Image 1: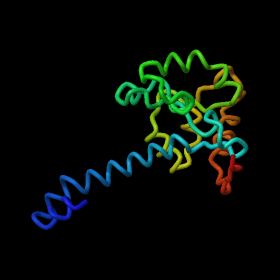
Image 2 (image 1 turned 90 degrees about the horizontal axis):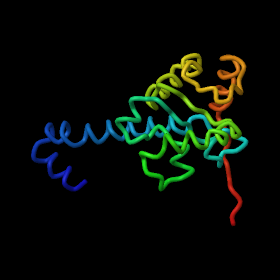
Image 3 (image 1 turned 120 degrees about the vertical axis):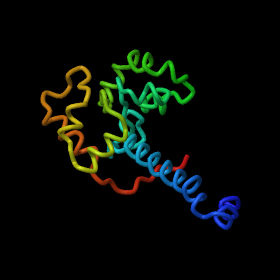
Length: 160
């Protein structure tokens, strides 16, 4: 920050364009992405990675960002190499079904963020992957997505 202050003093316009705007924009985009990764928390099991994160498959974003869309897998196995996430997801699909994990296809976190901001649950349901055909209709999927995006109270965990 000291360097930025010095640069502001030397040339505030260049500092704004070269340092401050990119910093603020990238921070905002990262926060939007992180929020979307954890927007569907199940209030009954907030500590369950299958229920506090989502996974995005078959998305161009995954090819550009080291399979970042496999976010549940990232929480379950943080040391897993990024190239192994798709196979790990496929091998563990029964667990995703058992825990009723939310998986989207052909969409990235920024589109999820926008659809949530505009309450387009229908568009989210269109990209929802109905693993093992657990849900009988898009209305059931929309109900799940709305239920998981309700405001939840402050959660405390017992000390160990």
